[in-house]
Image 1 (cartoon, protein in one colour):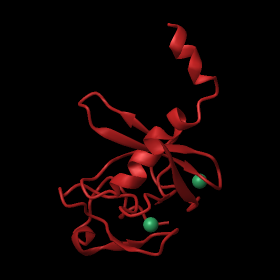
Image 2 (image 1 turned 180 degrees about the vertical axis):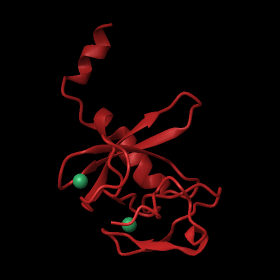
Image 3 (image 1 turned 120 degrees about the vertical axis):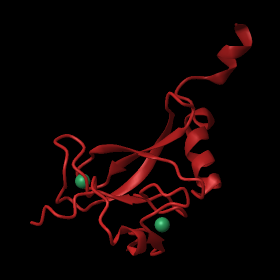
Amino acid sequence: MSTTDSPYEPSPTLRTSTFTCLRCGLSVSALAPGGERRDHCPSCLTSRHVVDQVRGGRSDCGGRMVPVSVAVVRDGAWMLVHRCTLCDELAGSSVSRDDNHLVLMRIAVRPLADPPFPLDLFGEV
Ligand SMILES: [Zn+2]
Ligand SMILES: [Zn+2]
């Protein structure tokens, strides 16, 4: 296993490198428009398990990571939470400007659309 292409150290080839989305097959540039590294597909927001979130460094899993939730981080930016379909590991990744807004909103409202308790309770408070 090579240690030269750590995901934390952008290689000179990063600017031109692309990856193919595991879900929709889109060819995705590894750099987002803002210059930050992109780790998920901007169309369907699917990612791939290549970074070990627990120990750090590279993961050999390679499983498909599906977006399960969005979280708001301290500066107000949205963070996308992925879960690996093979090993269930969770990962957070920053949302890019050109990420699919419709898919993002669908993930964000999902808990509100299907609450585990009756919503009419709110009528009494
Ligand atoms: Zn995709
Ligand atoms: Zn995994």
